[in-house]
Image 1 (cartoon, one colour):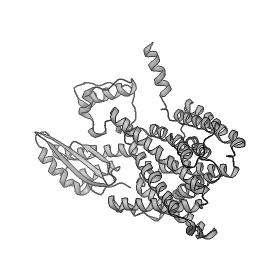
Image 2 (cartoon, rainbow, N blue to C red):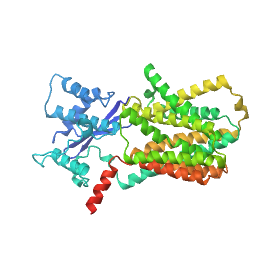
Image 3 (cartoon, rainbow, N blue to C red):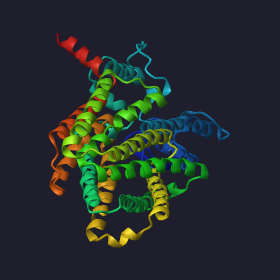
Image 4 (cartoon, rainbow, N blue to C red):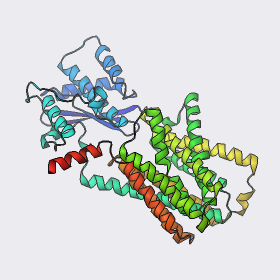
Length: 465
């Protein structure tokens, strides 16, 4: 759970005052606590109130307002109310960023058309700008920047392409895992050992990061531990183990084609959990996914020898685990019950311990003696590039582009994995596997289109006519 870590005040001569509230997760919120001509006075009031604010949950805005307003004997007045108002603005800004929603959506949603008594007030002027931009698709006026709550969050074309580049790095990083895992499987390395070593290495690197950034986030309750235990089963025993074992029986292209049916499973799971109806392009994507899997795996299996029921089984296990991991992770992060780094750390730690216990009971650790420096190095590369760099670049991309855009660009893992497999292990993909990969990429692109894409496309065509 995020906590407010500090408050920073910025005085802009001659009379302006801005407040930045920062959480222990690095999320920033901005507010403007000022009475014109009394900036220093309001700043002193904010500093006095900071002892109540630091350490508080930034999403409990109404509770904080009651504490600050009713906590003292004397209430009201321009100085105290301006100080409270600036803190409240910053907390709303933080909450909007944490939940991925604009503030107006958290307060009342889109109210449709409305009337302003006067356009001289900043509130009515800003509402008219936002209404024209969102409802009518008109470009917002430059004057809107004067009322932007967080100036540093505006997105330009340069930052958009920076996000796309980060997502491309993610896809290429994930693409390294598949051919290396296939090589280790062909060398006779136990896939369970590969997953366990990789998992513990990732957990160790994340632990170092958390200790440097915010070690208090490692403290969890018993109930939270049970939740993370369930999450860890999806992450390691199902997702990681299923995918690595699928590489033992399938070629890299066939394993990737099955693996990238998980967006469809996630979509159907979201329909059941959140009640979201798929869009027409997403229905078409479902058909393309089925066609891509059939062409890439089943239709090519008799000729290339890549078909294996056991490999398909492990691939399906990985898809179920990854889809469940995405859905459960979305619920946990959206409710801010956990931050991302501790959740991934405990997911890998608990999942690694579970898998290690099964391996110790079933097969033991005699295979470790047969592993050489190349095997250990390949596992280390998979952990650092495939897990740490891949997930880090993916989180960076989400700062500049939407999750749908980032997920679509991340499908670069399929062609990069197939290409690297051909280079590293001399497994040249068949024509059917290439065609299946292209259909899967097209399907994910269609599933990533915005809900109002067709409506906006039709409106633009009508406007052009």
